[in-house]
Image (cartoon, rainbow, N blue to C red; front, side, top):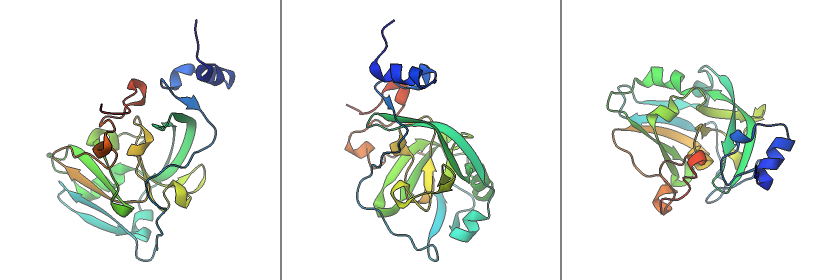
Length: 201
């Protein structure tokens, strides 16, 4: 059976090659990629909001957010630039803890993540409700580094990692889907790594 060089490396590392999406290669590193500069955050004035199709919009300070329940999840992450990293661990607040506070309306079908510098990312709400989705404060046992989204980043399983918005400041629930930053530049709205949904064209 023909196996690509990338697939052979996955097998040699002791992993199931089915975990590697088409066109990807496995790395133990965590490459840094983002649009724009790394923003500064002052945790004394920082806040996180949930707005849109909810009965109880909220705005939480950093301390209030960190008083919510925390969980740790482990998952594979895949970047549209073709690297994959297996068994990445994240710790943070599960969406379920926030959802209990805001009480989404039945019309809430989509999510728009709002980050620093106007960056947005969009997914169907089902992906935010996945048990592996997280408002992450930590990665690999340590606080997020600034280049990986400190103090808070969204982690969305099952999508290319541009959907996991760094420097998260808010979640907006919407009745309609609205393209995010990269989608407006021609990236695929669905972003499924195993379908190689990199670009819309």
